[in-house]
Length: 182
Image (cartoon, rainbow, N blue to C red; front, side, top):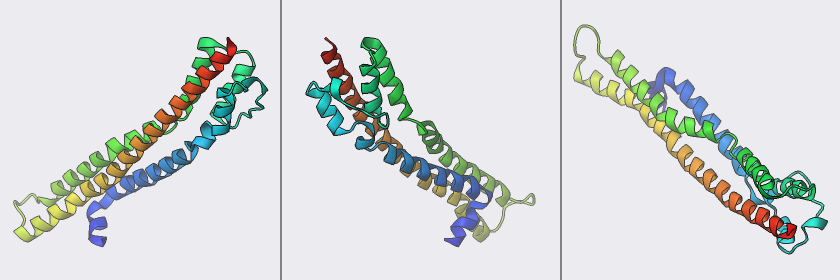
């Protein structure tokens, strides 16, 4: 393990930062995207039953804010646009996760190239043992970069799917509100 960390050299710092950042963002978004925090089932059921006018919805959830906006008189495209703008807020930080997914392997590759560049002295080729060890150490940054990017990609895809599911629930909510407006 120490050899792996030594092999990463200077590139371990940005890779470590990427790793910590992505763990924080995925964890924070996973908590924020819990269904009961976005579209609580009791609110959706009450709206579907036609009780939207009497709901005392708070503004702590996306569904609550949409219902309040509807109760204040928003209808049609205005209500749909408001719901879309609220859904966009759920994707906060996704672009950073996507950037880490792209940048981590590239940082690893850059570390590999830098390691290989320092491996060859100006006098010619190093002996085979030094060359083998140097190549192995240089590749460690690529391995670390991929070990960061692959789980980040899985997390990003999972979060995107959560937003899609929540978006469909918000669509049902908005359509149910629209039906009660008629």
